[in-house]
Structure formats: structure tokens, C-alpha cells
Image (cartoon, rainbow, N blue to C red; front, side, top):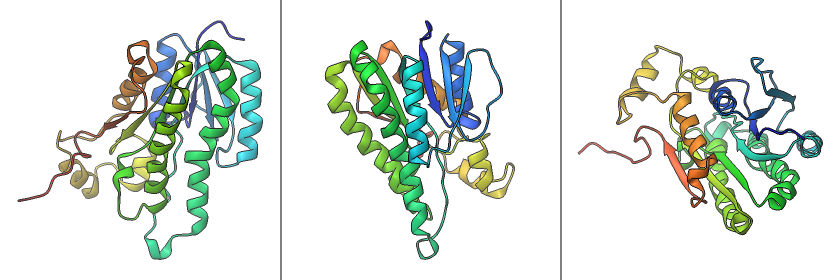
Length: 242
């Protein structure tokens, strides 16, 4: 077992996940990055190749990690959008995103929970989305990201007696990430329109999300559990022209 604290980050190869890995590493953690793609190598960063939609593969990886590492910090960040209007949506997309956003963190936590309970300490942060409030053309994504919030609240209540907190971070539009730029090209009119609709007047940065996650993962948040923090520049508040 490692003598340094260990954090597990899913989807840590790029975008928000890569920033989360860098943040934990800077704070002296060893970091397990679970992703299909390899991250940039770094001291203390361990890459675990896995398709998080594949429940059987996640179970195998989770068992191996639990046997080798004393993981007390878990951040489930991996996400896929698969946008589609209702009429053209494949029902397989709903199942796939439910597997990625809901089943994968369940399997991971089940494997790591005995160690957390024994230590009477754990920090679980689930990355939801501002889209949990609803977004046209995002049926599977919005539904499963909203499901993350319900999942986390249930876990928070069940695990609080063991010193384990569970909180959710729900980002709004975060620029400089492959997921966002795959749908909204940098410098496009769409990007300008989205930015104009954000009350603070800019897109989010991966570091904005990482700061929120590190707060929930730290000792200062010991009395906070079952909460959702929207990191969205005010986009979740809701505005309408008068």
C-alpha cells in the first residue's frame, strides 16, 4: 500500500479530469487515472486503462485497485454527452450513459468502501452537470447527470455515520476541453452566443471545477455532505428577458 494519500479520478486523461489529476498531484497525492486514453505522464500518476461503460471491466479494475491502494478520495468525472433529439435518440445511448455515469461509480465505491469504513474516512465527489436541470437535445446526458445527484444524496445519508462525505459538482460550459470543443468549436458563433448567455461573461475553465472538487475533497468540508455546487458562472440560476 502507498504511504501517500491516494485519489482516484475517472476520465482523467484530458480536460477537467486532467486538471483534477494535476491538482491532486500538486497536493502530494498519488493519483489513479481511470480512462480509455493514456494521460500525460507525471510523477505519482498511475494510468489504469478501462472502458467505464463495461461493467465487467470496471469490476475487475476496481478489485485490483482495492487490493493495491488505500484509496480514500474518489472523483467520478468521466462523462459522455451523445447529443440527440428525442425522435432520433437510440435507446442504447441511455443505457450506455447510465452505465458510465451511474453504474461505474457504484462498482468502484463498492470495492473501495470497506477500506474507507475501516479508516472511518472518505471523500467522494461526483461530477454532475448544469444539464441536470434540463437541456434540449441532451435526454440521456441530462437524465443520467441528474441521476448522479440523486445517487450522491442517497450515498451521503448512508455513509455519513462512517466519516465518508459525498458531494456533487455540476459544471456549466467549460471551455478548453475536448468534450466542449467537439460540440462548440473554439472561436465559433455558437461559442460567442453561449458565452454571452453566462452572467459572469466568460466560459468556465477546468481549474474552476478543480477548485470546487478540491474543496469538497479537503478537510475543510468535513461537515458538508449531500450537496450540489454549480460551477457555471451563474448559468444555473436562470434568467429571462423582461
